[in-house]
Amino acid sequence: MSFGLIALLLASGAAAGMFGAILGLGGGILVVPLLVLAAGAPMHSAVATSLLCVIATSSGAASRNMASGLANVRLGLSLELWTVMGAIVGGTVAGVLRGPTLMVIFAVAMLLVSVLMLRRPDESDVFVDDEGAGERLFEQRLEGSYYDPSLGRTLSYQPSRIPLSMGVSSLAGVLSGLLGIGGGILKVPALVHLSGVPMKAAAATSNFMIGVTGAASALIYYGRGDFTALIAAPTILGVYAGSRIGTTLAGRIPAAHTRRLFALVLVLIAIQMLLKATGRWIS
Amino acid sequence: MTGLPASARVIRIGVLLSAAFLFAGLVDSIIAPDPLGNLAPSSIMALPAGVIALNTQALIHTGILLLLATPIARVIAVGIELALRRETPFVLICAGVLFLLALSVYIGSR
Image 1: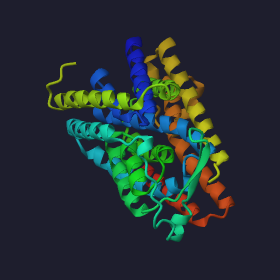
Image 2: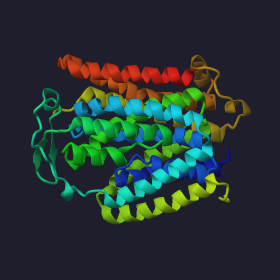
Image 3: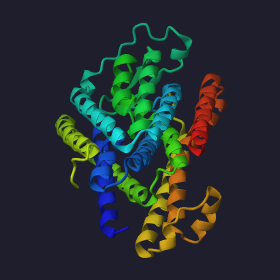
Image 4: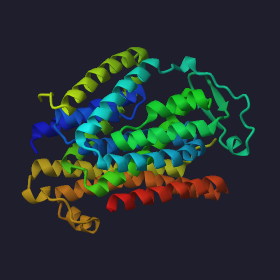
């Protein structure tokens, strides 16, 4: 493999990791198109590599969030069971789909994500509704609390309507296994709006789940031999570096502007993916 | 809710180890390009010998497998920590997640 291609893969991974960290995503939504369009990787290999990148970014943040208590481990475990089931379904279905078909599904998902990015709630939009929560014994055990330095106090919350979040988690798992994305774009809004989990705890808990969800489908891709080692290594290392840079920059860049720009980029990439799937893309 | 420090440590160690192997494999592919280095190891059992021989593919595959193993090890570590706290429902959920991960290994290997 040429040094130029290694540099391109490192840069692609770094860009995906950095934007992922700034926007609170796993970065998979960028890794797949960058690998397919810029590096010419086969779609299944790109999805498999992206799943590894998702595990890498998730793991980096999860260790910090678990130690601080920001990730609600009990809630995450309860939903993880459902995301993993979905991921197994997604990973298995991906094996029988052709590359161009996966590209079209991916492009449609990118367009939907770009819409969701524009509608994503800010911290100030979060409404923690605990009315009726805690009526069930199991839900009481999912109670969480964390110290919020921006508010200068400890926030406590009681997650509710868990079965609804379980349903959304299953769907997020299917998309993760099928397309190599983390699925946080679905899980975080569900946790916030359906289960009344504060935004920061929802993002951390979603991130906690993503690693295991990614591993479930990545194991299927690995067994099928979909990984290309020399593509995976530089991309993952780039993601590691990029997510560290992104975490540092995250607090300094206005999230709303970045989201709008990112949504526009996603639309452009989705169009390119559609062109590639239909054989009209000239690289 | 208090954090689970042992589980967080498991993740950190897994990430560092996998990054180290991936980096070593990548450097090896640049400084010592070897046609044989492009051959994937025939099985997981062949990986240790490949790593000792500084085979590019063996180093990278070890890094990939360590990365895949990290979330699994995290589930086990969380399960043990919750078992020590006698939180039986969540220990059972951990067992369920591990069963599903074993199922995905089976599906992938068919």
